[in-house]
Image (cartoon, rainbow over all chains, first blue to last red; front, side):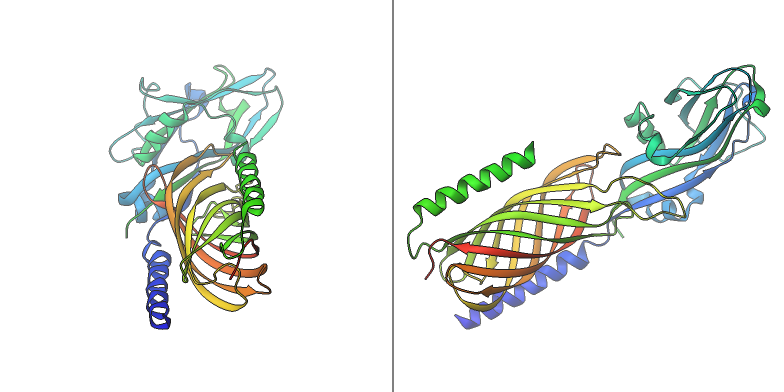
Length: 183
Length: 185
């Protein structure tokens, strides 16, 4: 009986070791990408092209992605105009190398609206944290599918006539939580 | 709601076993609590775990343990200087574990190996993430039989909870528990 106990104990230790070490090749990683809008609302919309291939965490795991667990934003909005303003955000899938000198002329038809009418009072400043942004996001499944491609464009609109000096979006970040498995 | 159901179910089973157990049936039940350490999860930090289990001695070596456990991981640390300010995920698990040794109703100190399978539901109220699948666990423990009726045990266990889109959430649980034996040798 003692010998059986000992053998089973050793098998147990081996199995425990396999569970602990063999499965550590998968994990959950959080990616923070900083955003500075290249194209301002003075030109009808904001635009920021993104390629996550430049991010080392994404690059390490992009071939073994299982899921986008969560995605959210941070940004600060200053509305120094005399009227209330709404901020809207779209994401659209994109391809190819980013060319900041060749901005799109319109927001593409396949763009997905993920923030709809975030109101900023006249003369007000709104800071949206990551946690707060999670409550503002719509079309989450489509948004995650776009983010999972790793190459996409970020668009924003505000009041048509306030111009970039009166309505500024700064300190932008997109925060992506990914699950990945494999080596 | 689900948590209340499991606790109610456990207490009902506990009462039934208490009422029907006879000497020598090797039946028992217990409760445990401790810490849970998420592994390779940037979006979680150390949290608390507690749960309940039944115990049934199968032969002279193996103990079957149906269980239910509740884990609440902690708020994640800042990533690249960015605080996420979200709650950690909750993990609700129920299933069956088998331990090698540490039979109900025995006294003395007994190291043991434990492994099991169960349903693991991972849910984060802030991000909306949710996944429920079967997973497994394995670990080692030390049983301390204080009397034929009461024993303590400490346990370190790795859990692997596969996710619906692939991959898995993993953690190490370190718990201490108290067990009550209805029968015993």
